[in-house]
Image (cartoon, rainbow over all chains, first blue to last red; front, side, top):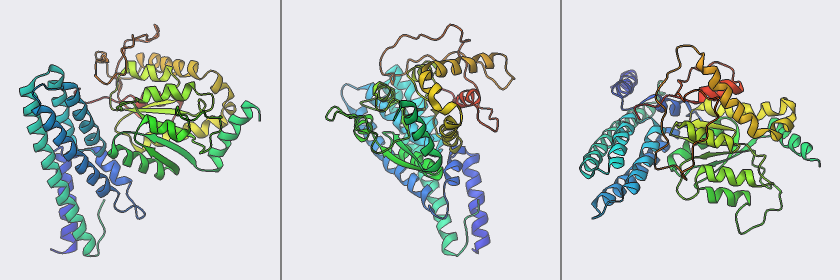
Length: 149
Length: 239
């Protein structure tokens, strides 16, 4: 695939992520913050997000395994997750968190467990997609091209 | 140096030198983002992960008795509201209670667009309230405030009537809205029943406030005190 095709593919891929609500406007805000002096900003933030998310998912699983569930604690973790996903523009993850918090408020164990599953699913989807996107960007850079806006 | 002179002097510095912002947020992702937003806006940034650390940085913690000298010259504090341990609101109070640091403008960030919360923070002396996720335009607006303070009456009047001005601005902005164009959405008040409220404070909204409504962000180009208050309140998605 030549450079132009790669660039084209990236543009289309990115557009699809927005179109399917994986990403929202906040993500483009982050892209705007990247420049020649900070060329890896987006990758860095997203990497932090991945690490933080994995930590939170573990905490959530643990919290929901307890014989007596501390829903305030569960909610606190989901709140954090909601915040970080919102800050990077991972819209579907954020929405999954919102639904999750409702079940926490109702102290509904079943609902919470289902939401955790859903959250894992959405997170894993956006992670895969962002990684693919970064890979494409890398290919473009390696081919000596620049990343289209 | 006279107090007013002191205020002027610090404000002058913001035009000549770099603004030094102390950013407080327990989220590592948000700290990274706010740091970048501030740096790209030509601010020096110190980012800490808790209110306690913020106080330590300022020299306001229990161990030391601050002699009032703002050694590290923090020009602005921007803090998340919901944090474990000390909330942004509690940090705000501590800063405003301190004779040494009460002049430092404090901006609160929160993912929750709750009127009672906003009101409470402004009444406590917060300069502004940003609904997360934080954007570049939010940071630019804050920076504008700081440089504008210098031009408008050298900051004395503002210092003296800080709380009054803040309350009035909020009230004014809502009065403004009640006769406003269709871009304003009216929705049932959001109750502050979220678990993140620091303490069960009774709501004491000013009687002249029209029923709380969440307004959409229609952004005029140049910030003015009223505009920025209204612009700040974005609609949240289905919460």
